[in-house]
Amino acid sequence: MSAPLNIECANTILYCSRWQDCVDFYRDGLGLDVAFEKDWFVEFSLNAASRLSIAEARRASVQSAGGRGITLTLKVEDILAAHRALLNRGLSPGEVKKHAWGADVFYLRDPDGNRVEFWSERPVSGHS
Image 1 (cartoon, rainbow, N blue to C red):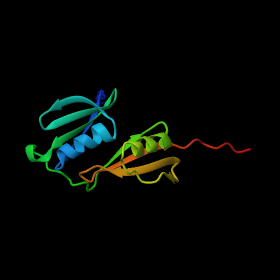
Image 2 (cartoon, rainbow, N blue to C red):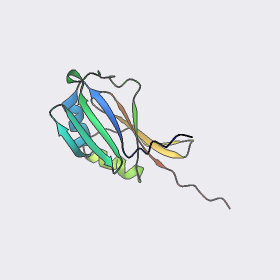
Image 3 (spheres, rainbow, N blue to C red):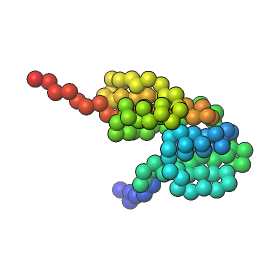
């Protein structure tokens, strides 16, 4: 058996054609903290071990996917509080829906069209 990878941090990089709009969306709209910033690359801290980076597609070797085939999933503690917070920041999240797999979820799209999913586990109701 081979040695484990021991991954210490995960980072997703989105290559965006509407780079500044996306930076503003994640920084100001979602309220994410900037961990690192360069003239065409911004890294946000999601938590101690997760990052999300926004790279300007025209200055990178990878082009924008234009929101096709990408969903960022972000688990939050309180789905309704997260939904309200985004509304209060002037964003337009979709309605909160209940999924069969035991979660409440809503979606929103960034300026480049990438889908962002917010979800939280639904408490299990007790049966007598």
